[in-house]
Amino acid sequence: MKTIITSENAPLPIGPYSHANMVPASGNMLFVSGQVAKDAKTGELILSDIQSETKKVMENVSAILKDAGMDLTNVVKTTIFMKDMNNFSSMNEVYGSFFTGNFPARETVQVSRLPLDVNVEISVIAVK
Image (cartoon, rainbow, N blue to C red; front, top):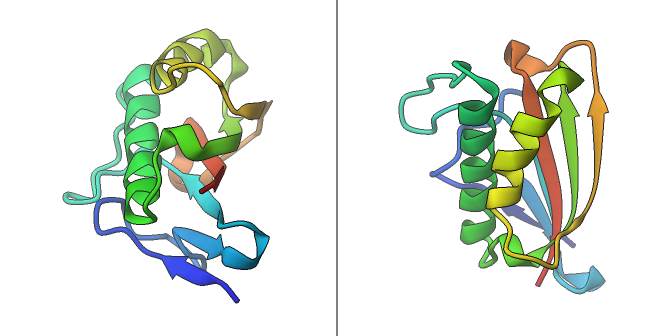
């Protein structure tokens, strides 16, 4: 069985998916769908620069983790999708500021296009 996690502090999904799924049978693993830089309250996309965009994405990920009784220290794996790998170092600086050591495993890939024409999307797997 799985438990659907829906956060009021993260933007509503833009398609047929959940914010996250908790899978207790697997040791309380949480699979968080890819998040973009959309403000949960206003619906506004934050696209002014890659650093602001990455910060909002990580805040949305954090909100979902919190509603699942977790935080970023529970994250074991992240996947980052970027529209332009030339922005990698700026994104990476902001992304890294959200972790305090014992970093999760990660891959970062460049893609041609992302939902809502954002520049970065991040998904995570966390374990309680």
